Length: 243
Image: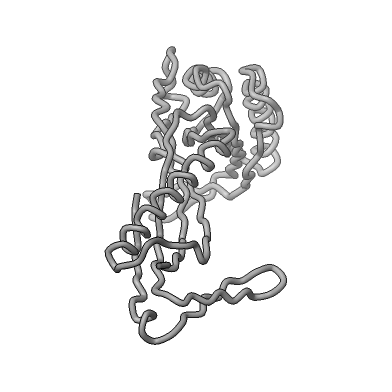
């Protein structure tokens, strides 16, 4: 957990402080008669992920743009069919980019680039909800599906609402405990909340390097370790010290 603390101690002697918070219809003015403590508290709850996303695709080359595109489309359909045959639902398969570019090779004799045809790439993002199958799916895409690249996986939790709730409760509890310590140390009896704002965040392990090519395909599942992912909540809370 992290804390950012600002004590407005001069309020006890120089009057009140107006804290302004924006609302959807109008601004609400909150007046504090006593010193104010502002805290920024972050709590993160970690758990084992149940979902993984990765991107894959096919790149083809041909003498003409039409040939390159048609061959790429044929191979991409095979790739998508392999994803479906592995149990990945159609809603969890999404095309993320199609590109067509002229292809050049460096001509050492003429010391310049030489046009050789066209290059087409079709990238697809897929989501796996049964992580015990992830390694075999990645290997199958290269060895049987014709994939020329893999990126990911990116792990997550399909339903993180309970994790957010727990992190929020911990942040609230810790923030109040800290505010009450400052109040007692300053000669006050307790605190009351003036304002609360929230920032949500996800904490995932670094992307796993599973980039492979057809030439490096192995006849076994790709080893995958899911680790843990975190769901974090940051609360910015203002407390007024009260007698």
